[in-house]
Image 1 (cartoon, rainbow, N blue to C red):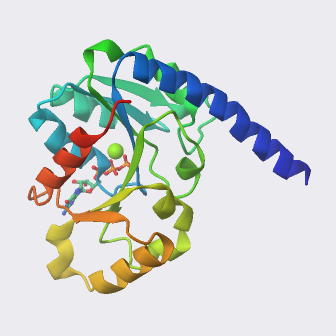
Image 2: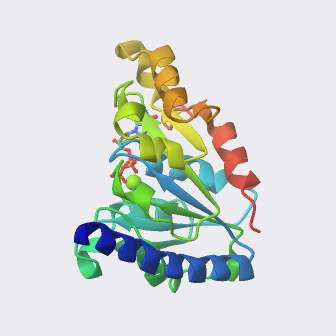
Length: 218
Ligand SMILES: Nc1nc2c(ncn2[C@@H]2O[C@H](COP(=O)(O)OP(=O)(O)OP(=O)(O)O)[C@@H](O)[C@H]2O)c(=O)[nH]1
Ligand SMILES: [Mg+2]
């Protein structure tokens, strides 16, 4: 019972920071996407490929437990980036919450951006619980992860409005059953939008680009 109350308090405190973030995003007229997935599904690879091609000013807030590897990758394709390492100040948390996102906003000039993508820490559980002030949520799912994942991690699949099904180039080498995956996906989130992608070949890049740029700022 006490545990439940503590969790509720944590989420309530998070909501206050999320409202502050949202106010700043809207004042700067920047659309904000919270991009989530399990570790290694291909979030950074898709962003590297697609963000430099957009005709809007895009930036990234990178969430990682440790290292600047992903932030360096984003920076090397010419996209402004801010890094939040949870290990440094936030007890190595396995997700980004609204306060952590807030701590990284100072390194970005929001007024110079139209789109901010928050690359959350790779994890299919905790990130879904914490709103960070974003306008929309998306997830990247890799075909190497298994058809049953929507059934095992329903909150994540339910909390996103679109799934980018990545690593399609590997399908010929796998026994991944796309129909079964779609059935499982629709069991937990009927009518959810999804697109088949490959950060390797570029398949689906247009769908990703147009979803990102359709994100409303207000
Ligand atoms: N074959 C193939 N490999 C891919 C694709 N997308 C990403 N990868 C590889 O998958 C690995 C992980 O990709 P990342 O883009 O780092 O994944 P991530 O989701 O950002 O990972 P974390 O930030 O650690 O959670 C890398 O070795 C990529 O080269 C794809 O479409 N096809
Ligand atoms: Mg990454």
